[in-house]
Image (cartoon, rainbow, N blue to C red; front, side, top):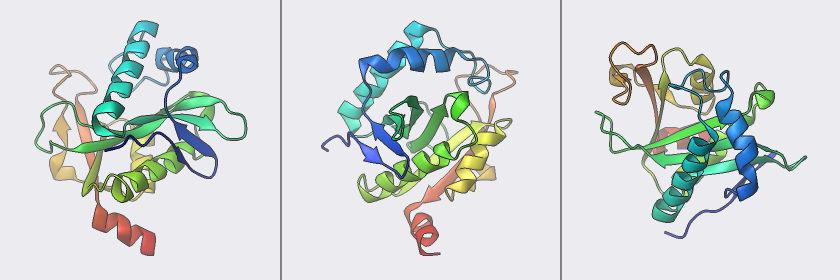
Length: 189
């Protein structure tokens, strides 16, 4: 599959990562508030490594986590996209949708707008049959984005994240799903 290098929504450009994104990305991933639903903030090196993995995912699968840029300012504000789930769980193999935005861009609808655009790409261009999303039970803001883009909580599929130790406060995760058919119904009405 030829990589899908760029998408657009009304206010956002979803593009490939540039070397100049690293300072803003590293600052975002080092912010304890942004990373409160993850095991720990990331160092600059860990953030750079993540960008490398994202680029590799695009090369292998043709899609991935796009860097988000505001059209009005050209400012990097985070990422949104699709990724092959990288661990074994009852719902895998699967493709997940995810996002992370710098806190000064929260509450403006950017996460939902970009996620909707990525979801449309997943069903229209990548021809996926289903997309999942998951987060810790405590992460209500991300669950609201999942609901806003038409995903449904698959409560019977909630799980303990295998990369987090027993007793870790973020270990229990909720799973949301949306099928191509559900997405098409959302478009119709």
